[in-house]
Image 1 (cartoon, rainbow, N blue to C red):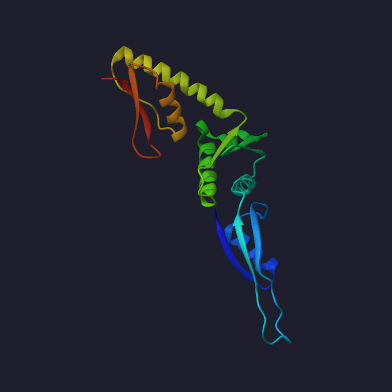
Image 2: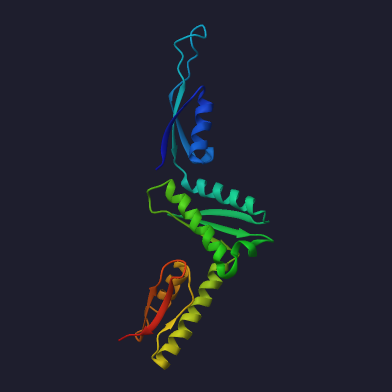
Length: 205
């Protein structure tokens, strides 16, 4: 949990400085006034600045604020809806320009999710996650990947030759591995470094 202590001429100024330092909205934090400001006696001495302790208590709000800012900067007509499901934040995107957010093979969507997860990790030490989907793209992509995995597995069993798939995101590779985890004749493993890491399907020796 992220927490900072900040001073200012007034409580309001101290809070604004803390929010600016953390780059989070006010709705995402808890504020404790450690010390109220005190005006100097006769304007000369004895004054004290205000001190506040600001704690990020709603890290999901930080992610939502970040995503809204990114979408605004991208200048796309996309609506963002967030819902909390246990330890994860599910972000659903829709709108006329949602295809631009998805990108080729979901590359832009995956990059946005990776950035959002990075923001979330900054503000919590709990195992929380962000899932971003756009008009059901991930479900459709998962179904496509499962079909691909099973078709490639058949070819491997027919030819006995290893087959390498195209580079994929960590989530896509996980789908491939899961799709063939119960297959008794083939095995899957990932090779290479990001962003070229890919899955290889081979016969079990």
